[in-house]
Length: 94
Image (cartoon, rainbow, N blue to C red):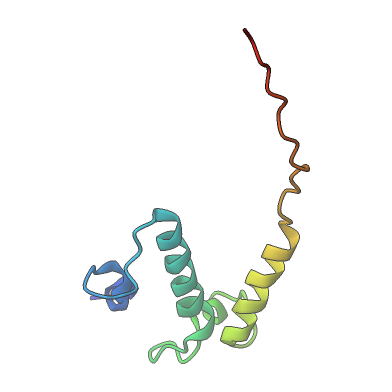
């Protein structure tokens, strides 16, 4: 029987302080978990990461590599620049 990688993730239970109330934040947490599970964590039976076994990478990643990817994606997705605030002229009607 194959062990479910999500079973070890306590973020799915509401008993923890890290429970996600927003679906978007929950999706980010799951994505980070899968990145760590597949690229950083060396598995006992494989004796390498699943990404190495699939031929995607040649060596295990560090958590700092994942952080660098996230920072690069944030830098490329520049925030939209908002225009200057101009108050509306109030029309006084009698």
